[in-house]
Image 1 (tube, rainbow, N blue to C red):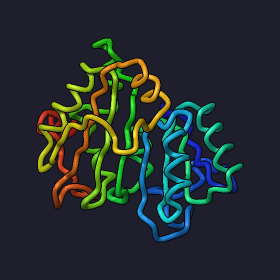
Image 2: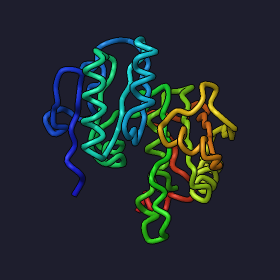
Image 3: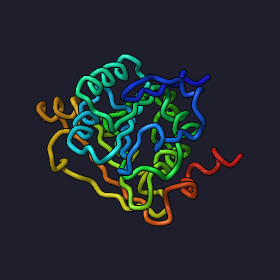
Image 4: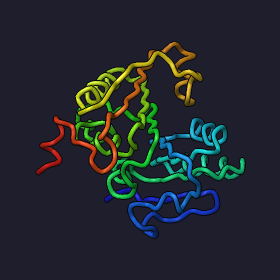
Length: 222
């Protein structure tokens, strides 16, 4: 059974079950600016900074930990930011059943749980059977940014993305503006290696026609 899902907006909290699916994002957060999504935003350092520095854009955060979602919401409301929404719930459930496809100019995934034990690999966000849900959020020309300090998992994510149809993949030594999350700032200060990726689906990838990963087709088309 999926984790109960909740939508937090600048002025209210609403159960996902009380709203139509896919979510009418443009009605919930008015404006015409492009959307950016951060999956697993933690304490919200990056999401808060981006929402404050680019008020013309709209930002959607996904986080399963209720305490972190509440912390982010409290800070965003206290700062008077109005260009955001936060979803509390399991990411794959929200991506598959709640969010529209092909709406985001950017998707950010930073330091996700690597689920290092083999029996837990099915819980990973990036898997051949589910990567189309992540990339399917992107509008044409959109970008996925990913970072992890768990290099074995990072190499597996790079391998999965490299095998995705019509996708350009690049490794980055650093972000232009410096660390984007609390974890990244801590790990960079410690000198810990970090794997960073940028992925850009080529048209017509993204949206409802996002293709399935060749390794994952058997798990999806049963």
